[in-house]
Image 1 (cartoon, chains in turn green, blue):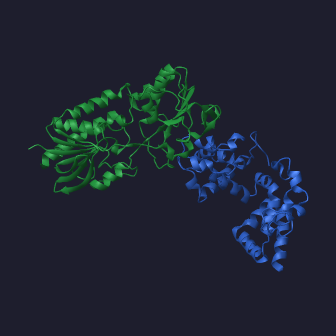
Image 2: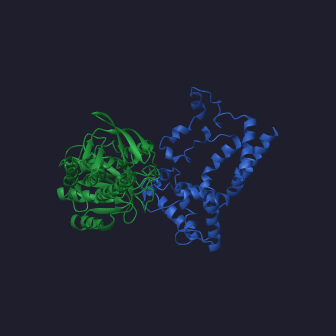
Image 3: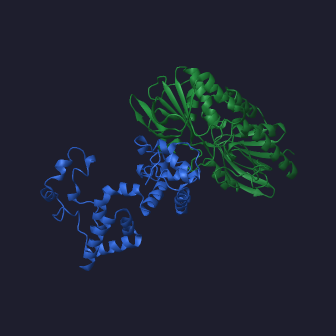
Length: 347
Length: 225
């Protein structure tokens, strides 16, 4: 008899895990809270993915197609886990969706509930939601996905754009001490895209550190060498309204110019990643642990990063911490292997 | 006192070390000085940074350097440029408090009666006198053009005919100009006890001995009443 495995979350990690398990002949139940699969990349219409700037649609579309066309995957949309309990080595879950409630028994479970974008309105110094022309990376990503690179306030091309890194990350005041890992790379990528679209636009990146790790280093070299993006060391302290429908970024250029107050046509906040309300909800429902940063806790960060503290429940993707889509997909596959081994042993 | 080319008073290395150790021993120091990666958000938001050569980022960096000479370099003019608005503490992502460090250094400067502290506190002697002797911070007769240039061109008018203007205020004003409100002798005596216990009188004795004598005379008078 085939194994039954529950995958919670239909983003990059969950989709890949479901497909891999289905390929092994496992009966997969894929539960997604939204009305669609694809997770945040789909929800916020990510346009291009770093490092090679391939269209996000190619990656996410491929995963969705793979899951949808596989008959071993039972798909639940607009669904949630209504109740969950252990049943010996197995698990019993009630899945509630638009078609009603269904009680099922599973040999193992993969949690891939992902992350939430930090809401920059929580940090008042950035005046997000106060000025139309202050947006964040997910807003810009969606705008670019819709082919729109213009200022939200008047629909005109921006003369200059400021990109501010580490918004909602590495900041004890907002409660997120960690680095969100991808925002630097996404921001530099967006700077290049902006410059490619509007070569005349001046683009500034204000940084505390630029963490385009590994091969992504190439991106900011490209941004500086091919597009003359200004990369300035200094975190912005305040955003206020300026003359001629501009917004003023106030801060200190700690290496060159000292204090600055520059009017910009558009400001893009590189807001980071958070565990979101779904992480504590999952921890509570499934009886697994939450870490001090608000993400789901790995049993052993180095040795068993895809295991939760509870046998038979596995973790994949950004629910255990900020990471890139490529990493989330890798983790989906790895967690699928762990979940399959557990199910095989105990079924 | 001799000064170097940066206007910093010349003292021995041992003395610089002693001052730095005194700052570090303060119970608040550990809480105020944490990590710093030079992001500059504190200085970017610092109001005096727009007007003076003062940077909360440098305050933090000087402390983190563990170099007593760098900390001593701030003791003369530098620490007095801070507005004590604590914007830096409000926005530092590490939860550092450069303004708090300034408070610690200023207190050392006052306790030890450094020249810079005496100089900076001189204009406040009228306020100190009023406060410590009468329990009032500011009274109408202190409003004089010389002392309030920041009030602008109308300070002249504001300082004239005070008894008459006082009568026009539709609330009890004691009908005097040397007090803002009436403080009962009992309250004043309690205030003196607090100042004594908290070491306020001692600090005044260090930074302004003649003011201290005037205040003590008043204190003795009130106490003997």
